[in-house]
Length: 342
Length: 288
Image (tube, rainbow over all chains, first blue to last red; front, side):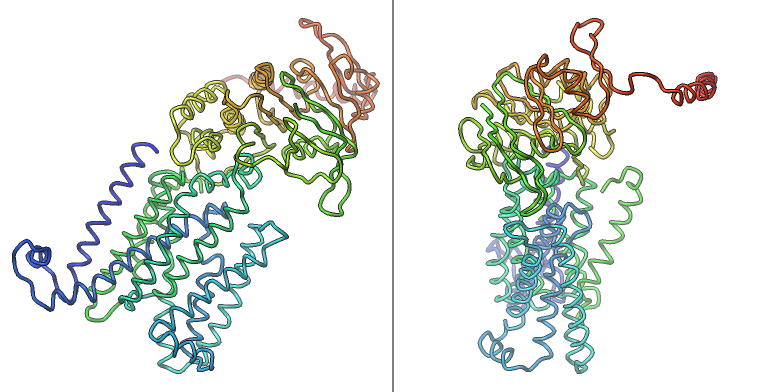
């Protein structure tokens, strides 16, 4: 890793920490520095309301934003390396569409199964169903693309398109037949929101995200080697089948959990790795940790905007990530297009 | 050291047979050049040795051990393969690509020895000025040299004993100077006690640098032996289906092979005559 890459990583880490603290402090109830010092036992005063807001509302929400952003961006970078295609993102293996379909089912349908799951899982029924849907469609895509022991990456891409189309059509059908209230929840869910952040969500994310994240981050050499092609990677000692299974599984779990809890937040998985490639290079040893920090930073900032701009109402976060991320992306593109090689 | 024993290879499970009954041995210190027309099975042989293609009959052994029985990670330190065409979809720098050759040697962070090996390999391939250059911005020949530097860096390890270097058309896109440099490097690598198998198309370069030559045609090994045993007008004409004439290299005294019709035909003379003026015109364009 060269000096520039190290500097970018340190910069991202510091910005992440700062924006995290700002996100804790800003909102409908402001938590000023004096309240912080009091909460940390350093003197000063804080109200019970501030304490409650911080621990019950803000804390889960910021943690969720950081973990979800990290999962989406790293998932995107990993998919791009796996598919050797800079336009891939986590939704390419059907994760988002599968989760979307089962979320729409959970919202609209009153079938015995859904009711049963609802009775069993209570408030986490929707995330549990969405997560199951994400894993199901990802494994369906992986299964279709498998030829004996080999998983064909090109077939995986096409299978993902097929499954996404079917799930999208069924979601559309459910949307069409949904009542007004149901339609609103479906739309809200499909646009993405961190409004569902609570203790359960934090626990689910803390279980589902760190391990897959670590699995992908430590595969940086293997993902680099795959850029040479699967056969060439094999000559470098990389078991391509194992790495494909590992990366698809890890991405499905962490992005599946993210989509299940936050809805479909587009753009981060595609744009964060791209921006970082333009800034610091394509080596996954740099790109994966940088995407983790960059995704966390972007989603944390976007969520802070989403809940403060029209407070006490909220803007869907998918709208914010696209509106904030895309101009940065386009600006970089304009500046670099002459030397751009994907 | 490398023993290929009567192997047969099929395309897929029930596809056509690509290799019939091929046997050969490569000892340490030997650069074996594999020659033959397109589709004669040269690359298939190389890929079978690389363990990419399943062998339906016979066996391939490296250091007495069946090639499939080797641990992928362990054999990566002893065997390297240069592909005909390697394209890298992302903007990796030349140095990062050469460092990939060291992946079998480190888990997360390259050691000092890895950096030394990368630097040495890049120097050999005259890539000192290309360390930070991104691959898609380099010419075809420069990219090819980068990949050659990568396989050299991969086998830069004295502890494992003889290594096996497999080169599939290493001279693609290279200028004359680098064609000779790569062949010399392949020969030097072999003479350092390693096995090298190279598929190449230029018969004269093969004769000049290889220790042994294998001639292939239609999936069969037609001949395999020293230069004197294999460079034979009749054998070469049969291999390529093109008349061949062997003379002597003016300086080196080694065989020099000429392919093509032995007598200029009327038609080709006519075309030469007619094309002359246009060649002259292009030559006489004033330099700016």
